[in-house]
Amino acid sequence: MKRVKWGRMGAMMPLLILIVAEALWGMVAGLWLAVVWGLGELLYYGVRHRRLEKSSLWDMGLLLVLGVVALALEGPLLERLRPLIYLSLLLLMVGVSAFSKHNLMLAATGRFMKVNPIGPWAAYLMRASLQRMFVWMAVYTLILVAALLYGPPAEGWTASWGWLPFLLGFFVAEQLFKRRQQGRWRKEEWLPLVAADGKILDAAPRSMVHRGKERWLHPVVHVQLLRQGGLWLQKRPAHKLVQPGKWDTAVGGHVAAGESLEKSLQRETSEEIGVALAEVQHLGRYEWQSELESELVYTFVLKHEGPLRPHPEELDGGRVWAFDEIEAQLGKGVFTPNFEYEYQRYRTVLRA
Image (spheres, rainbow, N blue to C red):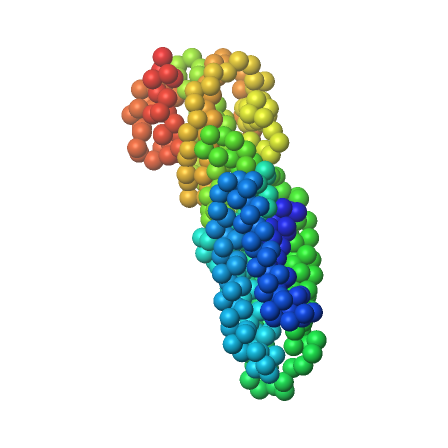
């Protein structure tokens, strides 16, 4: 989480420099210091990374526009409008980052933390926090507009810094809210989030991965069980949320955060059919999307003629299906769509 906080501060740093310096030495001095900071950023990334940092140009452009407006309004009118100008600029930055594809705060995180960019879960948490911040700031902006229109002129410290206690109140409320969220999530199973090549990017609570919105890719293992006469398939119990009552791959389950594929295979095979995993053959991997999730499926095949002990809560029993019997029932709603896709993908190897 430290990376996110520093990225957020990095995006606001030129504006914060302007606000503090303007309060101490005036608008012209504040603009000069903020522009010098921006030029320093451009020079640093130009020398170190040999590229032009466009987001730094964006920061400087906003400051120059603000400076022109402030100098044009210099005098009593500026004193009255200054808090609204600063807050509106912050609101613009937060709003663009929270609700559009152009996350200025996330870009700043990548700018300041080149080695360890944040993963999908951390990016989601950051965006959700920014959305709450935007609502909080929008409410205060409306209050400030009403005060400017109908209230007495603000003077001194209140005019320049009156919005800071309100923003501080947000951060206090946000920390309390996050602590409550984290307490609930700590009780859940966490799943790794991966790229298409299987590289682990992050981890997130199972309930968030399965709510069908973000579509984070996460790994699962499947075991096709070969027995005398064909494939042994499990029947999904009626209480299952996804595809209840249909026939499915013998073993299937999620890889837990921090767990290897081998460990996950052993755990799921033992839990679902009561078999101590021996030698298995890796068939391949593929991406599968259902109405609730996006999975990176690692498929294995196991030959086993010994006893099976199907888990009474996870499975509604199972039986061996002859390959010709499977072929005759494809597309008739007997099997889960995932099984049918996987079977047709690897049918040649399985039947061989």
